[in-house]
Length: 76
Image 1 (cartoon, one colour):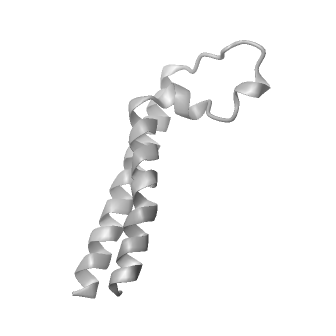
Image 2: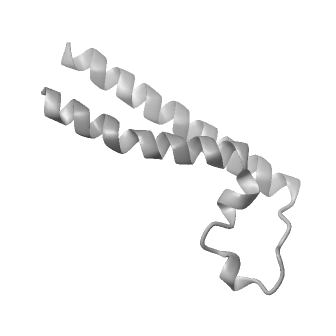
């Protein structure tokens, strides 16, 4: 990978990391992002749904980080 590809990869991963970190720290709001119009009142998520959302965000963060590190390792 050349310099331009690395630059584009980093530029696209920064918002993705930001979204995943926000999703981990604030799972209720991130789960309802774009779905609030379906409800008349603010819905409340149970603890299982919040836990699942946090685990999915953390897993995605770890997988993306490992893929990025593997990509860096393979390019050198």
